Image 1: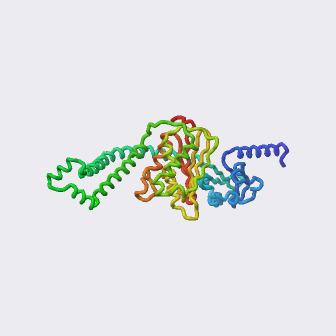
Image 2: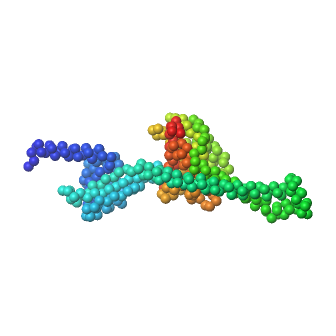
Image 3: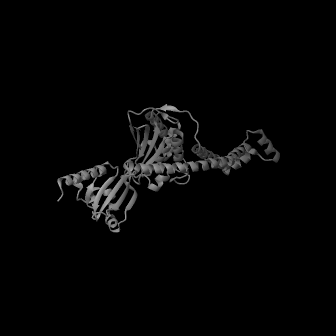
Length: 394
């Protein structure tokens, strides 16, 4: 029989153990081989919304159903006496998407037939890993893009110059052309009529148009690969976003994809936003995202009304811009590649795959900010831009 002093020590140690468990940032749960709860800490109560007293004796999978699949392995872990780890478990969707790590450890002490489950929120860790991987990829591809751009520029310049020269060599307003035609005994007007009838002038026009498009792509590649020296301005984010929406509504190329008059635009601007020092290139970033949103919204069914939400909010020493649409969204593999140069889900000839990579370069290299996207199939996309307040470190 225990003396009162020994009983007091046991209660003291039990309380100390519970205090330690409640202090840990991890969710801690002890269960039997059937998955019934025996002990939980405060973090579990916060996650599940169930108190320790109410949780005791209940099946853990019913209390936190988002982890039900992983919790089916409790009995196997106990029988095999080998811990099991599940990394990057997704829970929630859209802006509420979180990532968790779950470990199951068998208890080999007096509580034989029991297991301890530890769950950690690793969302920020996953985001940092993605940003680091994206940054390394961008650094490598940036050097390749610069080299490619310079190599392509020379032959492209020759193509456009020679196309222009062909047009000039058959122009009736240049005396040298009339003289050369007279020397070989042909009528320049008849030559022009033939070229017109056979569509040669149209072909030349297409060559020049394609050259201009290629030149734009090259400029984007060079922009992606190096930071341009442009002037900073102090900007009210709400005013900037409204100005971009006006530009987008009048942009002919965007109207061909989707008319902004048919999209519900929701403005959720925080009233306490500070002024931000940024370059005018940030307007290009927002326009590129809006173009992708318009493209996505053109694909939704007739049962949904297309919508874009623009939000601003402060977040510590950062100013946050969110651009969220209710389009078809994207799967995880697409989301991880969306900022890669030349990656595009659009049909060949519709997009170059450079719009979002240039936006990434402007935000990260030009403004020392971050840009991320949250999305799942059928859940739309939410692009999140974070910029240093007052343009620090620019």
